[in-house]
Image (tube, rainbow, N blue to C red):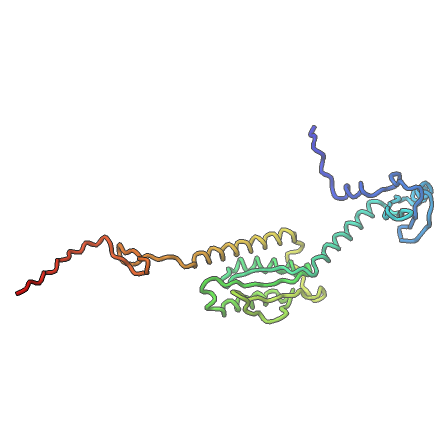
Amino acid sequence: MSNFPQRRSNNQQQNNQIRVNAKIRAREVRVISGEGKMLGVMSVQNALVLAKEHGVDLVEISPNAVPPVCKLVNIGKYLYDAAKREKEAKKKQHTNKVKEIQIRPAISDRDMQVKLDRAIVFFCNDMKVKLVLRFKGREMQHKEFGFETVNKFIEKVTPFASADSEPKIVGKGITVMLNPLPRSRRAKNPKGEVNLQQLEEAELEDQRKLDAEEGEESSQNEPQEKNDSRKGGKKSSFGAPVLDEINLEISPKAHRHDI
């Protein structure tokens, strides 16, 4: 038999943290009904009898209160409701979060669709999206293609979001902020539920690749010493080419003799 402990589910771990029925240590507890009605302070024994009469559990929901507060409720239902509230709270944490999606002017149709799908998931989770189009090298000379790509992206996400302003040039790219529409006006994600964490990791990986490409490009564009185009030419300390390995036959000057 393996000596490693078996992995328990979140509900099992949470259940072990919450005191239920005979595990409640306090002598007296304040009891409330499943509907939230205050039933008063009583001994744990009396509270357990009351729970048994109602066919539910005695669940300690506020252990630090004096006396501790217990609720008459089925422990399974209590854990289910607690998990549901936690899930809703996590969704609200993403409300003011801004995600960044980066594209290129010559992005392929397939890559464009991948970026659109990711943006739609973010919008459906009430997140803003900062769309950034990066120019590379001589692409800056044709900014109109960049604006065309950005406007195409904005048009595709119209059922889910709207731009808070016109796209504008920022540094070596074009930037625009996209805000999710209210839920009442927003279309549903055609792909249904998507793992948000995996999506965020994929977008971060794409950004790292773009950053790496830009780093390689900048290193290639750094000024380098160029050899002279002439064969066998070397560069002197003054920048002028020096001819070497070229054999020139130089005839000696004729000496002048006095007549």
